[in-house]
Structure formats: structure tokens, C-alpha cells
Length: 263
Image: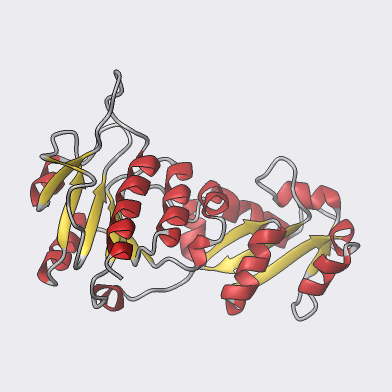
């Protein structure tokens, strides 16, 4: 049992929780809680690098059963609190290897919908977008290099496990990547206040990319100019814009609705 917060493995988990640079260097990120652990053991068991649990966690038979074919380390409650990012840890933490995806495989998908995020900064927004994207059948998510780290603990918690099932890519040159989509015949729909159509008017058939911009500034002019269509969401009252995750949800679910009606 690990009982000291000075233990190097404990310190490393804390480092992975706090530092994007360290997560990238080690290719690892941290998950907390029973549900997240069960998700990764079901969907990507080989990705689990380390598991830490408390004695109290093991006292629950169903939780101990999930761990029967794994290697785990028991830690004290004090050590668990030192490693956890949540205020009230659930008694289990794991270090997980980052999934690897090939952009070329994603681009080959026909009649697919993707989301492209330019400089999205809020962890909760990104996590919610991933979770919504999975539910709406989105093929993948592309993020500009200036976007929030998808392996930020707050993002991970918000995804509710979708992080293991939705292909995602960070790209240094966002506009070049959008050109690759256009090269395979994708239509780019930009969420924009100057939209010429409402979000429920395009048909979203064929390959489609939904462009969502920064929470404060929206899409850059350069990216908006690349879009085939500027699309807006109708709003009453004095509201000027919607939360980025809400806007993304409206777009991808409208695309999903249109496609479902043609099945």
C-alpha cells in the first residue's frame, strides 16, 4: 500500500493532472471515478497504464469485480485526495494512454459529419461537444492548436467516456486542414452571426464540416472566408450568441435529424 504523498508515482499522477506539457511528454492522462474506469476497461482496456484504489473502494464487491483482471495499487485515503483533482474523490484513479487516430482514415469516411473547433478555450464546452458529437454520430473532431487541451481533467469528466470513442486531432495549421476536407468534397458550414441561412436550412448531406469558433471572438475572418456557407441560429430577445457547446449541439443534431429522415 502507498501511504506517502511523497511517493514518486503519486507525484507523477498529480503532475499529469496539472500540466499539459507533461501529459504530452508521457502520452498519458488521468481519469477519476468508477464510471470512467469502467468505460475505458470496456472500450480500450489496453490503454490503462496504472490504477490506484482505496481500501474502501475495494470493499464494494461490484467494484472489486471490475478490477479482477487488472493490476492495481492500493493507496490510503490521504494519498487518493492528494492525487485527485475532484474535491470528493470516488476512491479510484487511473493513468491512461492517449488514443491514436489517423486523419487519413477519418477523411475517407463518406457522408460523414465532422466538427472543427477554432481556439475553443473552455474545458466544459469541449467535453460537452465531444459527448454530444458521439450521440449525434459525428465522425470526428478537429481542433486548432490554440484550443484547450482535450486531456484536461475538466474536459475528461465532461466527456463521460466519449474521449475513448470519438476520433480527435490537433492541427498546427487549421486552414490547411480545412482545405484537406474541401479536397475530398466536404462542405464547410460556419456558425456565424453574419450567416445567410438559419441552421435548419442546409441539407448537410454528403461530407459536412461544422465550424465553431472561440467563445469570445467566434471564428477568425480567415476561417470564415473558407466556409461554403455562413449559418446562424435565430435568437429572440437581446441575446447575441449562444454558448459554443449549445451551438455545436444544434448544428450536429440538425444534421443528424436530416440524415435520419432519409434512412
